[in-house]
Image 1 (tube, rainbow, N blue to C red):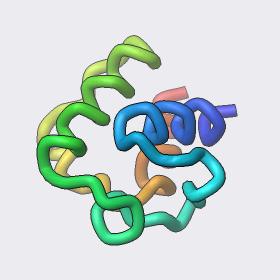
Image 2 (cartoon, one colour):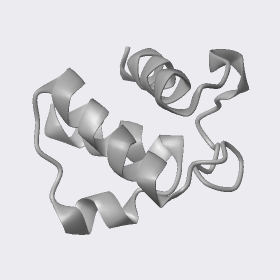
Image 3 (spheres, rainbow, N blue to C red):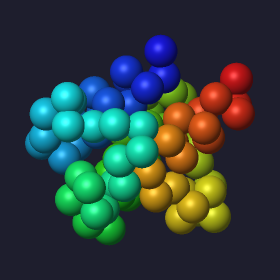
Length: 75
């Protein structure tokens, strides 16, 4: 499931517990990601799913749900 992979990636990148990550979690406000964390997370997602996320799409990603929706749209 995409959400489970995303939870693992976010937990690894941000150094937080997976059980603190929900679909409606805001990456910066709820999970504490700063702009560098966001860039590193996007790169980790690109590597994990073997895709490339363009800058305009990356800037729209604010929540975990945004990531899941983006990836589901690719399938």
